[in-house]
Length: 125
Image 1 (cartoon, helix red, strand yellow):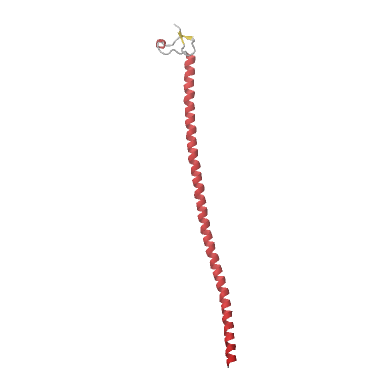
Image 2: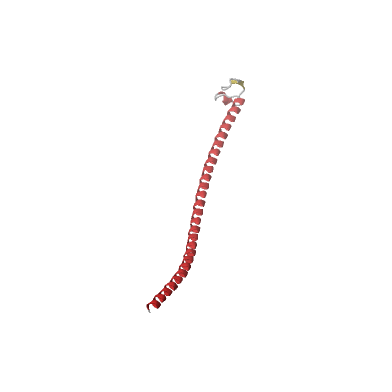
């Protein structure tokens, strides 16, 4: 007993008796249908994998941005510390040199004042 395929309208002999009452599909159309469903499922799985990879990639990019920001702030902080240390060292050196120069000038100036004072006293007598 031959049955007409509801998809391609070809005549085929059903494998089971119940096929006559169900939707009658020949073996080729059945294979094509199963293949089509398998490809569709595989495409969906592939699409899900791609979306998952994109999400993971976005997270990695965010982490890289965070690492760059943290590294930049650490470098800026360390640079500021070094800058303050250098400023402090320069200030100490300048204060020491200025102090030495002022002390030397002050001593010279005091000697001049004493000499001038002595000359004034000599002239008064």
